[in-house]
Structures are given as structure tokens and as C-alpha cells.
Image (cartoon, rainbow, N blue to C red):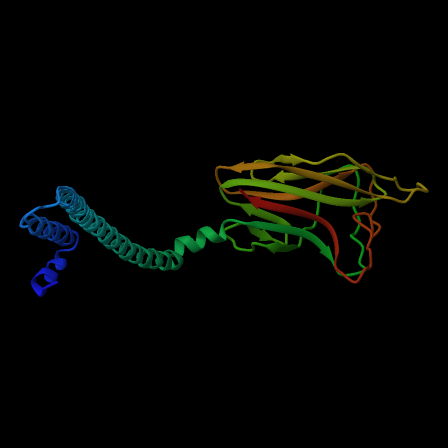
Amino acid sequence: MNEPLTNILNFGAIGLGFIFMYLAYKYFSEEQKKEKPNDRLINVGILFMLTGALISVFLGYLEFFGNKNSKTVTDEVLKIQKEISRIDSINKVLAERINDEAKNVSADPSIKTIKQSIGIAIIKEVQPTGQHGGGLSGDIWRIRKLNTIEGNKSPNFLKFNPANHTFLLPKGKYWIKGVAETYNNGSNRIRLFNLTDNTPEIVGTNAYSAAIGSSDRSTGKSLLSGLVELKFEKAFRLEQRTEKGNYDGNRTGIASKFDAEEVYAQLEIIKL
């Protein structure tokens, strides 16, 4: 096969189909020059030419439109990649801005105040290891001597005064739980008293410990829990009333002497 004819293969499927038709035509024309051409061979040559033409058209169609579709898909992929790259760039910029805003928020004094005004605080009546709770007169409401605070001690959350065993709660909604112990005082109960409004805020459960003089030595624990909603700051304290009273040093609780501080009453205050 000469070089010009070989170069036709550079056109791909169209070129290959053309070579088939050319060879068929050459064979067909040579057969016709004979004195007695073979009609059967001529018919085969014609069929070969038609087959080559169909192959050329079919493969040419596939090559043209296949390449066109492939180019279209490639262009779409490139567009998607560019869009993804653009979105990644936007995300990076947004992330940097969010980080900057977060730093600014953390440095904002008002945010610090908000953090200090939420959480939980526990106020306790505590004595050193081995020391009993102290005496308690009967049949009147007496102040439980809360003297220790744990948890959120910020004045933005509450203001605790251990000297007079009271605390101030600012405006907000609170869930408050409490417990206090007595020893051999008969019936007893605790309450959270609202000093600002001069009224009980939460009344505790009934409790009982054997009365003075009884052979039954026992302690009783009254519990309280409730929701407190305040529109402005108010003052509170924990109070207890017992059926009987005695200023013996153990009427508000017996020391356990277990190498730890003695806890005789406590309030748990949660800001909602």
C-alpha cells in the first residue's frame, strides 16, 4: 500500500472505510478489464464496496458524535471542578470570618457575664470533721446556718452571704432542691423562705425523728424541691421547724466522724 493511501488512516474510521471502498473498486475495475469477467466476483466486489461504505458512515458517525459528546462531558466535568474549587474558597473565607467572630465574642465582656450567670451552685451547712450540727429550739422557724458555697460562685449567678446565711438571686428561672437533718426532735420540716416578700417560697416534705427522752435515737431529713421564677432580684434563706427543741450540740445533726467535713443541710440551685 503506497504512502498517500496509508496517510488516509490519519482520518480514523472514515479513512479506514475509504480504503475498504478503494480496494474493492480497484479489484472490481481490474475484473471488468478481463475478456470474460466473473460476474460472481464482480457482485462480491460490489457488496464489499457497499459494506465498506456502510462501515465508513457508521464508524464516522460514532467518531464524530462520540468525540463531540466526550468533549461536552469533559467540559461539564471541568465546570463542576471549577465550581467545587470556588465553593472551597468561599468556605475557607467563611471559616476564617467565623473564627474571627468567635474570638471577638469570647473577648466581649457581656458574653463573659452571661457565662458567669448560668450553671449550678450548692450552698451547704458544714462543720469540721467530728463536730455535731448544734442545738435547735423547738416549735418555731429557725435559720439553718448555711456557710459554704460550691459550683458557680460568681456574683452574677447569686450573691451569698455566709455571715447571715442568706443569698440573693437575680432575675431568672431556677430549679432549687434542698435537704436538712435533725436529731431526736419529733416532727420537722424545712422551707425556702423569701425574705424580700416575707413569705415561704418552697415548703419541704414532712419528716420525723424520735422525740427527746425517747429510747429510739434517730434522725429525720426533710426535703424540698421546686421552681422559682423571679422578675427581679430577691433574698432567700433556708429555715427549719421542729416539734421539740433542745440546745444540745447535736440537734441539727450527728457527726459521722468519717475523715471528711460534716454536712448537715444543703441547697442546690440550678439556673434554667
